[in-house]
Length: 206
Image 1 (cartoon, rainbow, N blue to C red):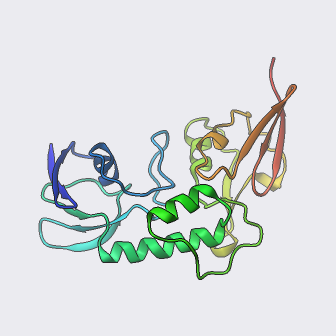
Image 2 (spheres, rainbow, N blue to C red; image 1 turned 30 degrees about the vertical axis):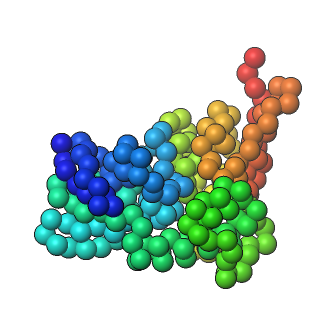
């Protein structure tokens, strides 16, 4: 077992455990939107950033969903640097998804109620966490969804923004989406999966 300190509280965790998992197991809250036990950690949302001091005295900010615990590690989940970093991230998310109740609630927990950034006009609720992409790749092994483009043009999509032959209609993308940007509806023998950039209709097997 590894001994570390999180917010002045000494805890123990198994070697290889991430800081986020160790904190969660000990009822210490660290916000996160791109983490799910069903997929490998990715570090996309950056909300889980924490400030660490290693045994050798080195200090830096790390993504707690990716950084493994170390003996003697000191972790601060809400230092001044972290609070400032998290505030900006929440303001950006509020601008991107102003109507998302999930984002609004999480922002309030961080003390953020408004954003200085220009609101996105399409308000598609997608935060580019890639949970849908990862569950499609890791759990169904079909890769029907991917992330395309770079920078401000980056978005989640399916090939050619049209019905994907690879999609098996399992709906795992809709179930795992933290902001409900992906929805699924069954009407008769047709399952419709609606994404911010496209819509897929698949016939259900009887």
